[in-house]
Length: 326
Image (cartoon, rainbow, N blue to C red):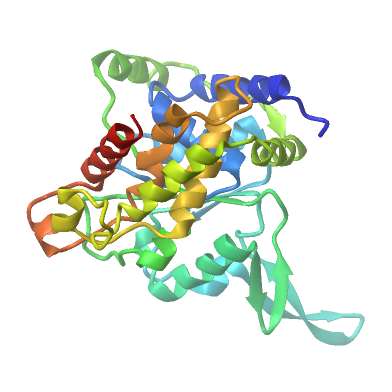
């Protein structure tokens, strides 16, 4: 492995620094998005309009030397509009069909307001997210690595939207909640966005370096007792498990899939490297637990009716498992 842990940390810090030139605050959001990218996963950002979700992803596109593409999802968007289509071309008197690539053929794809697209279009995105390829007219086209989908959605305005199915939610490595800034951050945002100059991020790392960083992250060792802790945590999210907490048994309809455990392990490995360590600790798992699990916990009717949040369930599970370990 040519990339060292010190170089990994240096690159990650450089990316965060460049993003910080544009984005005010939101340190945990930026960190979780970066962890997902370095782990090779896709991210769903949820928050009310105007909080900078789109700006954050655009800024990442500036900081990473990658091909960036934005897709504004609308109800009339068709699969061919994002994947591409075959067109009839006429060259030298010879007519034949040629494939014209859609905006999915990029390294970093911003799927803006993803829940406004119909299920048919969402399913086209699903193959690209899962397989890093698209199929048109029985021909499969592979997407260039690295390939990331950064999607946004608004949790408030539900009219004219199509909620993402559980299968597609599970494809997102992390779901990141974007919250309101505090007073000092709001003042800084106003200063940056109403002045004569608009800050921009410089290129921090290349696509090849991102691939190297992803490869290094997968080599980080994780002790057997930490892996067992993650496995028990996953099983405890299911109400039928003997170790399930009272909150899970009362409010959870279905728990986390194995893909959630994979997200925890890889996210914890990247978090450890970003802390300057080449081994995974319990605190690395806790740092990514909510982002990795909140969209994979399906609440039952009682949980939805009483306003229970998946984050509360995850927090209780983490505390219960740590008490057992202690």
